[in-house]
Image (cartoon, rainbow, N blue to C red; front, side, top):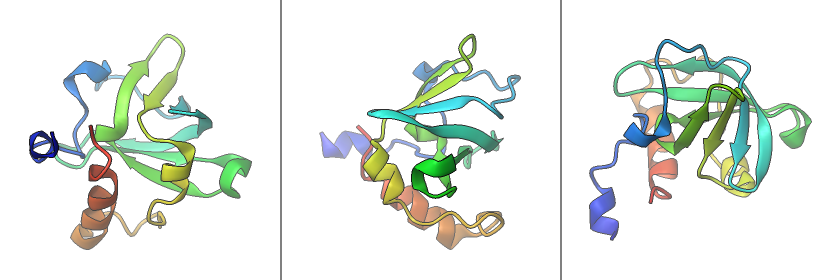
Length: 121
C-alpha cells in the first residue's frame, strides 16, 4: 500500500475534496479527525503548492499552522467548514509555521511536505 502513496501530491487538493477555486476559504472552520482546530486565516490555490493556514486560537497558544491541500478531505461550502485527515496531535507536532518563510522556500516546503506526506493514505 505504501507504494501507491508515492505519487500522491501533498500540495494539491484531492479530486474528491469538493474544493471550488472560486470560493474564498478565509474564515472557514477547520475540523481535524478528532475535533475543531481553528479557522483559515490564509490560503493558496497555486498549482503545485496549494495550502491553508489555520489560526488555532487558544488551542495551541495562538499558533498558526500550514496544512498542505492534500490533507483536505472535504470542503463544505454551505457550512463553511473544511475537514482534514489529521489528528490534533499530528497537526500540533508539525514543523513550525513562520508566516513569510514559506513563500518561495523550497527547503521549508520539503520539510512540511515530508512531514504530512508520511501520513497520506
